[in-house]
Each structure stands twice: as structure tokens, then as C-alpha cells.
Length: 272
Length: 92
Image 1 (cartoon, each protein chain N blue to C red):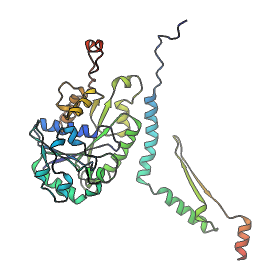
Image 2 (image 1 turned 180 degrees about the vertical axis):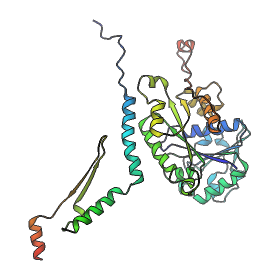
Image 3 (image 1 turned 90 degrees about the vertical axis):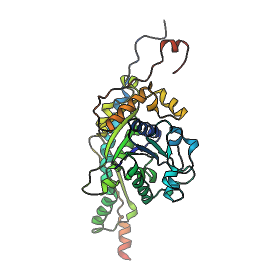
Image 4 (image 1 turned 135 degrees about the horizontal axis):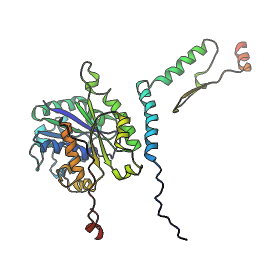
């Protein structure tokens, strides 16, 4: 029986899709059969981050509306054989998502996969609501910045009240984890950015990982590769650690430093 | 002589300010979330009490909530009819 994990945040631009791509690739690297679903109807982007944008034929909405079979819409990753992507529609609007439709697709996926990762759109409306509704666990992506932390707090409130697990009495609630992204230890040292401990104290949920602000994240998205596949990337390593914790391994929390350009590179005026 | 110094710029800890602002705001927002209907209910019930004793128009009620660190204040302003209004109403 698959575990359903929603990657959500409330605020946009904090790294939800990057994280959903990295986490699902990380799970697949460990041999778990994983599917990642894009819930951002109309603003599809997971396909680009995963590098399969030219292979999309049918999508999530086609399956929900019965225009295509689930097997036809799933795209198998070319790097990791245990990873599949279910892209969303670029043309329909979010009303095309229905609770029954989402449930039917998830139920069908549950039989074939170990993990179903739901990449939520920003906001708290239909797409975001349905992305979290059937989840067993949530990864709340947060930047150490006031508006992101506030929105994460709001989303945590919704996870604890407006989801299937919250509505069913007697059932355990959704397990929420904090993923702190775009963390810059140097700015933290200068007192310009909130510390991990500050954000943890405010949101009061367990910490899944700390992803450093890193140039390798943009580079990975440029070429359509989940950053976790970049072995030299500090962010990639931090995502690997986060995935280990997600599947229950005890791993010491360490803050990966962003890669510093070497003296030689700096002399040549190159930026990494 | 020279217009610069080697003294490090005194870092103002804005991160601490961010944390404190969030703590105050979220403490209030979490309460509001569990009871988002509080203000309309308060307004309705307070008006009912006052209406038992005098005539007031629902449109002349103004409710303000100010969230503070140590305390919050709820300000309710109700326009009561003046003596003249009462007199004309009484005559009608």
C-alpha cells in the first residue's frame, strides 16, 4: 500500500516543485517505486523540472475525465526506472480537478507504487486543497522569511483540519515535516536571516531537512534534472538526507554549505 | 582624513525582529482560525442586549480589534439615538 506525501507551502516560489522532484527522485534512487503528480493545473512545471516536458501526451486531467488511461499518462523517468511522473494539464483550469477524480487516480496508483508524491500548487484553493486532502504525510516547504513562515503556519492549520485524515475521527492525523529551503548560513551568522531553531520554535513540527541556498538548484532546473541527482551539489546531498529521514532513518542534521568557488575560479572571475 | 573605517558595520539583528513579529502575529492568527466567526457573533449578541433596552440601528455599529503583544483591545462603537430622535419617534 503506497504512502501519499504532499509537498506544500502556501506561499509560491519557495521551492515546492524543486523539492517534490528531488524527494521523488531520492525515493526512487533507493529503489522505492515512486510516482510524482503535478497538481498545479494550468501552470504545469513539474515536467520541466523533471526533464520530460517533450514526452507529455496525456495528463492527470485527461485521466480524471476518462479521456485517457492512467498507464497512457504516466511518464517513466529515463534515469531512474522506479520513477514515474504524472503531469497535469496546461490548458484546463483548476475546476477540472474533482475530489472523486483525484481519489480514483490515487486508488489506482496505490496498488503499483510505494510512494505517491503530490506536488501542490501555491495558495490554499482547490488545487492545493486536493493535493493535501488524501495525504498520509506532508512536507511543508518553508523559506526562513516572514511571509513564508506565516503561510506555512496557515497551511499546517489546514492540514490538521481540512483533510481526509483530519475529518475521519479515530484516524491518526497527517504527519507534517518541515523542509527549510534557501537557507543561507552566512546571512544567519550576520543576523540577517532567521535561524533553523527560530523557524522550528514558531512552527513546532519536526525538521526533515535544511536545504542551503545553492547555485546548483538553478543549474539542475536549467537542464531538467532533479537536483538530488547532482552528486556534487550541497543542496542535492541535503535532499538525500531529507529523503533518508522521510523513510524513517535517523540521520544527524547537518547544514550543507553551498559550494564556494575555488580561489582559481574566483581569480578567473567565474561564478559557479 | 579617509572617509572609511575598518570597523565592521554594526549588524542590526533583523532576524530577531522577524521572529518576534511572527510569534505575536501567529499567536493571534491561530486563535482566530479556531474561532473566525467571533467578531460577527459578538456584534450580534451585544446588539441584541442593547436592543432590549433601546432602539439602535445595526448600521451604526462599529467594531475594531487591535492586536497587541501584552494585550489586545476590542472597541465597540454604537451610535445611540439622540434626544430629538427619541422624541420624534415617541410622538409617531
